[in-house]
Picture 1 (cartoon, rainbow, N blue to C red):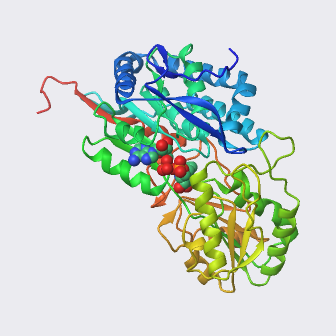
Picture 2 (tube, rainbow, N blue to C red; picture 1 turned 90 degrees about the horizontal axis):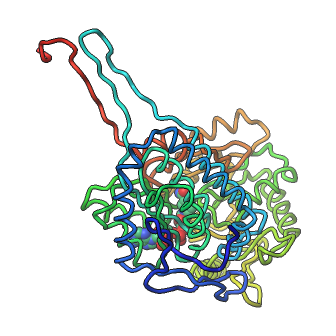
Picture 3 (cartoon, helix red, strand yellow; picture 1 turned 90 degrees about the vertical axis):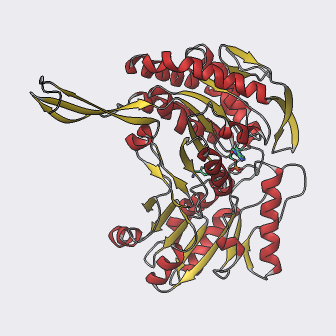
Length: 477
Ligand code: NAD
């Protein structure tokens, strides 16, 4: 199979066109380049019914067989990496090499889930009595993904949900539906009908999905504001939920760092994927002893980075994914200008088509600035100086989020000790975002609810079932 330009939804055993269509915009040109199906409530009903019909058979399929199917899907994704990657670049904007890494990440995450096993806990095993807890599938899972990593963040959900015996209805963002639709199409020849359904649509589709009584669990990645709506919508039918939400990750640079050595890693921690990463460095706190040198090294590094269309060879930073987000970021830049904050670099919106924004560093704005307090989710980095580590920790821990944090230092032990004082689900020393399908990833506070990845992430797609048997003729008395 080579990808064609015909995008259909995977619903049961069919590839369905949907009631309407919606344009998909290439963010590098700001023009439509493809059309995706727009699901109606009836389309969604059919997808959920197909998943419900498939559930008993899939749940009863031996674990090893399910795992083999998911590993086969991973192999198919890898074989089609050269088809997926340019499509991902066109709809998302990221450079082709990064798109390819994301596609390979999808395969890696699926394969890792296929290799995981559910624990069985035996509580008692004596002649008179046996008692154990196993983990059974929940039912039909709604997997909802954002537009920054459409395939990877779908993979966080699909592998664990499917291998544990659930059926899935995957809903990509309206900005990036195409690669997910192709994934659904690919899965049609590998998984039994109805096990993985993919529906695309406009802004109404998410709320229809989360309120639908045919859904048993919602696995959601997106903004905190939407996450709260998802949680409220799940309450009525007591759906299980996993929420991976926004963040405002701090990085702390200690006094003994080598600024020139640090600059490339720190730059990409903040500006990778044009800053559209939940775990991007979004606030940078630098010890006053090295502040000027770190700023100047970052600015010098930024000057050598190539921004452009993700398809063009050599591009390191692509466009912002969509108009709404581009406008939001421009408003944040205007706010910095209005308040008279210094721009160490960037700040201009390039002329011409596409949603581009040059890497921008705001030099020592006050802690109360919007660019410090809000999640920017784009290539604008505020950097602030500090002299006292207690103060740095206090500022890093302020705000409602608690997703990730990094500490950068010459003395890794001192950095480790400082990191342990940061209130977030992930803390890294001298590295950024070392994600693995085998390592649990969770947000604290307003950054999330529940866990993805690792055994903890696998268990989120199951319900515990405790069974016991009395082996004597006394019926437990
Ligand atoms: P978003 O919340 O606008 O949308 C996410 C998904 O939810 C999309 O598929 C969207 O169509 C759907 N949706 C929108 N409204 C809905 C509703 N009422 N009910 C159900 N679904 C609905 O987020 P976004 O703009 O696509 O992504 C950016 C945000 O995602 C940022 O805040 C970022 O930090 C966060 N994010 C978090 C993680 C993480 O793992 N914690 C990872 C990536 C992105």
